[in-house]
Length: 395
Image (cartoon, one colour):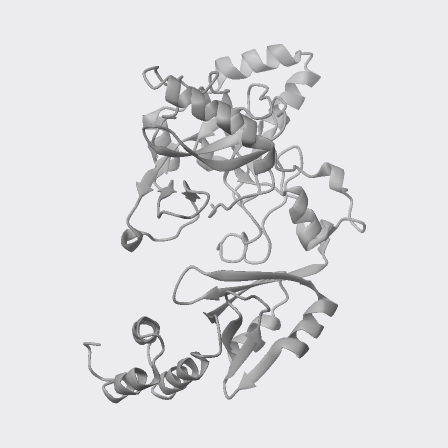
């Protein structure tokens, strides 16, 4: 689903974080409140609208849904979603709100909806799953959450095969997403007011016992409203379900067709092939043209991009890859590259890349030699020795 990062809503949550942290530590001996999680075959707003037309009050609708929808348990979670259900383990200030996991169609699968009113700064659910503390055994997927907002230690939660209600919260636009990519609804049949906007956020939280990631309301959430949060600016570049653009939802839980809006800015993500570092640029068409003309240098079969960043100043990209990516009619491009802090190692890196191209190295072998080169500090003498012994398996 996502690889979460710090978001602007953190400032709204500081007071609640302090309160929740204190409560969790002070009440370590208390039992974890049970959360009612229901299963629905369609989004709650649609069901609620039909029942309202039949004359039911909102209170009656909630009572009806809670009495007729099946509750999620371990067996149902395994049968329906193929996951091992892990309940909330963090003690909340109040009981966890009732929520429903609703089927939203074959394109998107399931989403999370509120079956209670949820006040701002309330814990909605803990993001549970498998805790991974060894970077060597880590493989990125769409259900990864962070537990350390500062990135000082390696620990992540993987909910791909284990988890609870929180893993079903979909990506909803945050206000800065609208500003960054400039969604234009002027020619469609909908307006910005029709959009389902992020109402929650994932954040790390530590207690005396463990480290957690929690889903917290950043504003009041109404009955039957979809619960979701922005997965961050990087989202939508690599997820196979969204090759061009992440889905937008309306307030009924329906996908808004891409024909209903335009995106005026293009996003280019430079992803280092040797580690998890990346740079993201969001540019208008005019800015992109100026940016490429002023900041790109050619070296044989490679493009050297001056990013303007002090920590990762240069991005080295295969020229053919660069041309192919820029020609794609999509709004979000992920460009594989090698990020360099200075020009000191540039010559050695280009030397090795061109040698491997000439010898038609496989992707696996390229990665192995490039890793060895990086570990050597891109020392030219060592690289020349590597190339001389290029057919040896032992580096």
